[in-house]
Every structure is written in structure tokens, then in C-alpha cells.
Image (cartoon, rainbow, N blue to C red; front, side):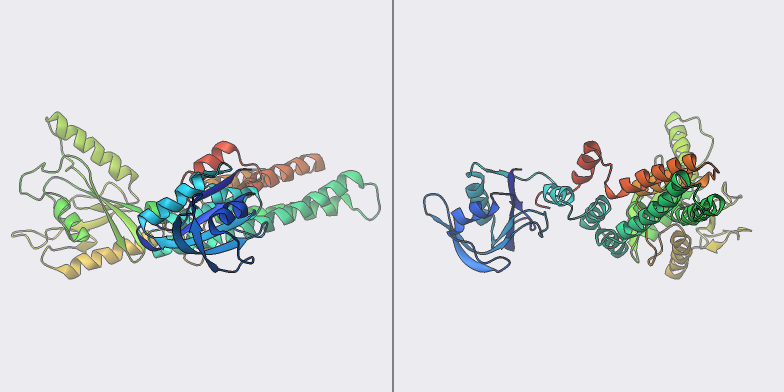
Length: 423
């Protein structure tokens, strides 16, 4: 396997630049620059020089012998000054060594997976951790990166292995007195039903991607019902153009808001009306599509909302001659910030029901798909031990894919392509 190197810290300029080298020639490569290596896992200052002896920088050098390293192989780090020219000079000196090459995106973590230092669920959690933008995203991603998902799946696999052993006993030793055929198969069925119930619980909970994608909140209603004014109030900035001219908003306008760790994607839509204008008709069609797909609909019309789960808002309640709307759940006025905050409170209470609980273990969509396949295998109860054995074998195979036991190169390329260079 080739030896790779990359800047693993943030982009320069910075106080310190961390350059990581991993592979069979890592120590030899660093020794050419530093003259000698410090004792393992001990940081010492060394003068880094190129092949002509020119001083590049004075840096802290660390050496980590494999396999108990981040990548599972010999790994070294150079903690140098974080200026662009300094980092570029050291990277050029490493690239000049024929046995080294620059790392690809996510290659250090991919080697950790290949060498058994982490599994696929932990790698996916690490990818989410690197892209986390809110506190709740960070907490969920850290739980996966630290192995909570993996521990749960391994527990399921251990239980499936025991059930498979009981089933094999029915096949191989059914004629023995101490292997009761009916009792043994009944115990297997009970274990399968218990595990199936746990998988049902996982699939009933929201996916972890919910925290990243956010809650889709759509504002709908007829023209001039106050949708653009309301989205500006909710976002506390001018997102949409507001005017008294009907049909000002002709297409969907989106704005992202983060409140208390939750991401909301607010969408202003064209007013729902019959129009001879072909452009306006397109906007109305898109508004209808957005309303149908919304996680949460804020309905600003005076008539009944098109969805039973909509929040019916009486907007523009401070407008002259505005009569109360019977059935509206909340009233909002432009000159009343408390009313806008009350609407946010209502939105947040609905949004929480769509999100993973903070103390619950959240699975990614791909992991949930594997759980669904395993559940389908476990749900059917058969009295034939051969069929039960195959059901258990399929459940093991699908759940094992969460840990990367059946991962394909295409799947791995897609995952590690999300990583930065140097991770």
C-alpha cells in the first residue's frame, strides 16, 4: 500500500498546520526531513530540511507505530507553523519523495475502515460530524462516530447468531432427547419477534438526516394574504418582495432559519388563484406541489386549509377593516413581535415531533433500509427450520451491511467523497 500525506488541519493561514503521513514509508519519509524520529507517541521539535539541506521550518514531530493508530498503519504528524508558504514548502518536499503521494479525499478514514480501526457506521457518523452545523447535528453524529449505532447492530448480530445456533440444533440434532423440536423452534420464534419489535421501533423514529435537511415549512394561501410579509417576519430579514399588487410572488422563495438547534426551510409560494397568465399558472402549480410535500403548512387563507394538519394563521390582523377568521388557530400582526414568537413556538412544537429525540439513537436512511430488509426477513414465522435458518441468515447479511461487511467500492466511494482532503 502506498504512503500518503496531506494537510489535516484547517486551511492556511492558521496558528499551526498539521501534516499527516500514513503508510509503510511514513517514518522513513519524515526521517529524511527531520533527520531523526522522536520516541513513539512523543512530541519533539525537529528542524525540517529539504533534499538540499535548506531549512523549511522547525516543527513538532510525532510518530505513531501501527497498527494502533488512526489509520491502522504507521502514521506520523508534523505540527508546523500554519503559514501558506511554510505548509506548501513541506508538502512539496514530501511530494518529491517517490514513494509518497498526496492523499485523496477521505483516504485516511478509508484506510481506518480497511484496516479495521472503525466500521462503516462509525465512518458515516464521522462524515456527518465533519459537516455538522448545529448542536443537535453534532450530538447525533458524535454518537454514531463513537460507535453507539455499531454497538446496537453488533448486539442484534450476536442475538441472531444465537438464534441461528438454536435453529441449526433443530436441523442437526432433532432426534436427540435434549433437543426438543417444538420448544427449540418456539424459542427461536420468540427471539425473532423480540428483535423484529426493536427494528419496528427504529423504523418508526425519524432518520438522522432530518437534522440536516430540516423541517420544510410552506406558507400557502390566496394572493395578498400576507405570505411574503410573514416569511420576512419569521426570518427577521427581507426575503420576499412585499407589495399590494396581487401576484407579486410568482415562484417559490426559500429561506433557511436555524432556531434552538433545528433547521427550518421556509418557503413562500405564489397565491393560489385561477389565472390566464401562463407564468402565474406555473407558479400556482408549483405552490400546490410545495403545499402537498410540506412537513408543515402555514395556511393564510380565510377559507379552510387544504390539509387537516395545517397551522391556520390569521395574518395581517392589524390591517384596517380586517375581520377575525373563524377557525384560525393563531393571529399574527406585523407590529406585534410577540405574535410572531407565538407562531414560532407553535411551529417548533410540531417540528420536534418530526425530529429524532435527543436521547434516542438515530439511524441514517441507508441504515434504516437495511433494518427494513432484516425486519421483512424476521416477520414471517415458519415451522420449517430450513426456512427459519435462511431467514436468520438474510437478516445477518443485511444488518451486517450497516457495519460495512458487504460494502461495495461504489458505496465506499460515495461515502468517502464527502470527506475533506487530510481526513
